[in-house]
Length: 113
Length: 113
Image: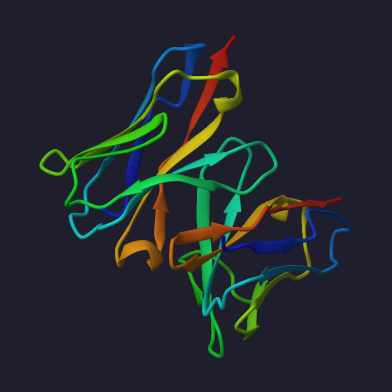
């Protein structure tokens, strides 16, 4: 079945630095990638939708300059958390729609110290 | 109108029992209703999904019941097992299985041996 590979699974970074999260669709072409953020014991909140070859669409309240999304090819979308702060610590998950529904990545646990 | 309300927040069931999780929505434009299972530190995985032209769908021990007039749908897990202990999310989208997903708040299920 469809697989979305997400890396890294865990990352710890210092406050003020930037972190890049990658999601690759391994056996299908993902023209769209959804990026979610999940706090402990809470639901998934959609942050933005990336589309191959065009600008990402951000949900209300999400800072586009802080969460940079690039969808440079049909198999790769990246989320860069710029100038990370402790409040950005969270679980980030990507998801791509396919023929049999959405396939989610395994998530990235970001801890900003 | 974009909300999906899920209950209960947590559920404890004995092994072999039936687990029931409920969701309600307002937007009648939703046309795809999936359920996801999420283990700690992992991305959600699709369990089963239904479209509004069907009142029930069964896959193994998992059944979705859909009540279009009441705008409610529920997940039934028959013969619940300790391995079913996880967080379950209902969701809804417009545009079939490729539109933006709106998630419920999640239900933490614990199945006691």
